[in-house]
Length: 107
Ligand SMILES: [Zn+2]
Ligand SMILES: [Zn+2]
Image (cartoon, rainbow, N blue to C red; front, side):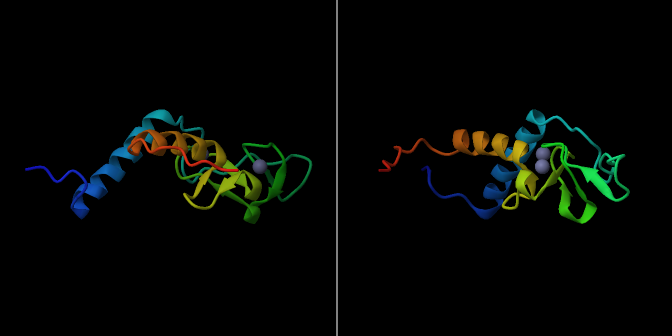
């Protein structure tokens, strides 16, 4: 007997861990966790966003938990606590991960 649509919590966690390990295989680590961002040599207290290459005060940029890039608020996806670049990869994976669903029509 198969209960296709019911997964125990442990199995759901496993699926999520799977997604993470798949993501990690796809995402190139640009920087080690805890490494500082690139300093803007023209200012004393600003650092480069690794995605748009603008410089920001350290408290305005965050390090991506997946690739280690530093990202400013506009290059950042708060939902997953990752940079926009990794968010694109996550979206790809979560789309292929889900059962195929008919596309909703939007007008
Ligand atoms: Zn940026
Ligand atoms: Zn990232």
